[in-house]
Image (cartoon, rainbow, N blue to C red; front, side, top):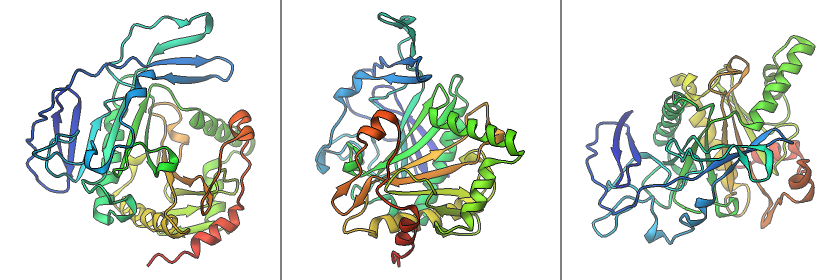
Length: 361
């Protein structure tokens, strides 16, 4: 993998990742104002969680027509976010970031009239990852070579972003499908570098600690070992297992765990990366063909924090869809949104069987 670093017209970094040497010397010809990020973090003292306030994102690009897509390569008639005429995988700093390294530091100590709601600058980094220059292609159709390049890019970005002073966790993810809330239809994902450990990660690590104290064993290892021989396995190979979790929250949810315990993507070796691509494309094809139209989904990498808890963590990917049946979505209504108690409309064992039965060849 070859990386080329350039700058966009407003100073943001853009990175080209290619399988072989490709000259990358196109210049961004647009007249762009400097990016101004006014994000701030507000601490919810009752829940013990940080909330990011990024009101400047209201003006971000929303569902442009295909011929106005900002993620397609530039042409002589139209300049986009990618100056080159073609590309393989591209990463660039989001123009409308929730978190940024150059965020304004001028924030008060607390929210107005709320002394327990501590305020901090919205420090971090938000990157866009374009998987292909082809506007109408989806991840499931990338092929093994391009998908493997994307995995290598996720790992490279995780390693680099983890080295930024103040970053506590790196989160690569993909939102796919308008039903999920995607505002740009071009095949892409994002990477967030948070200045705190996310609530989900903290909760998982607390469960691991309780299990070790009670049993002396590794909770991740116990759960994964049980699932690998259970009725909810969707697909598996020498290095990975993909299964529907026993207490899955979403109508369709699959978790991917490597056989070897590793903390994050950079720790995967070549064989494990190849094997993940094989399994992931297989399950994505099942998601695409399970119903009359491809399911929208979120693909969410659960990586170890940059510092604390790394020795306890087991890297895994969550792939889930909020579609419960053709033409029907699972809405997070009163119980889920109000109390955080998920009530699922599907049975995990039935979902695993339904996904296994999908013909992918």
